[in-house]
Length: 294
Image 1 (cartoon, rainbow, N blue to C red):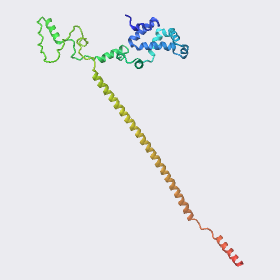
Image 2 (image 1 turned 90 degrees about the vertical axis):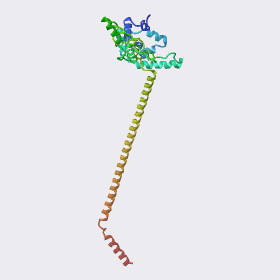
Image 3 (image 1 turned 180 degrees about the vertical axis):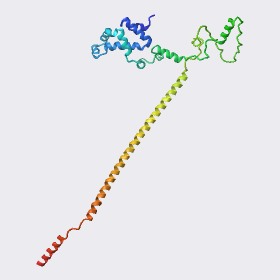
Image 4 (image 1 turned 120 degrees about the vertical axis):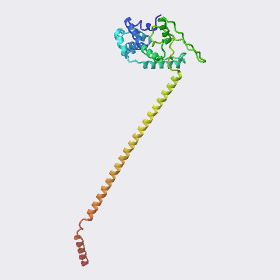
């Protein structure tokens, strides 16, 4: 059966370019499909003149069917796709927006969409996160089977198995799966009893703890900003007080200088020579003449 990604761009691009798209799809994942589509749209309808020439859906589809020859060449297409600034965060944001629009128009989804894994590297990291490495007790080769195999090879009778003690309560442990020619660190679908990952309760507690830490960090930053604001206000108030004090000192010095100037002028007036008495003598002589005349 033909996979779905093999039909994408198969009727639009040359075969060599389609093979390059497949190679990038196997390495990077679904985001390559978005990048190739964005590159083709940018070189076909990436200018204002081209958009104005497309009056409707029919003209737009005709324009998209007639792609430029340069953007269909494999070297040019691969270079443009790899240099296009499209990240996984942008794809996740667009996916979230589309899901929100779907819920608003058509209601809730029938299934719970999981986190999209873009490429083989993300899938490998997710599997490593869900399946932690095996410990020393999860070995595939049991010590009793090795001892029995060694005794048979030496020609002796096989040693009897150890007596089994039935437990009064608890489940009966399953048989140990052994395999020849396998490395002890290889995982086995039947002998691996390691849990795939933490439970829902553990993840919920971890999320709650992270949320509380973020809230404490925000509160601490808020208190730090408030403290800085108060410190700036205190410094500003101190500067204003210092300016006011300097202004008062200057005014006081000015008043003292004026007072000293007045005292000096009064002292000079007090220490000056007495006015001349000639005018007084002349007036008394003229008065005596008038009295004698009359």
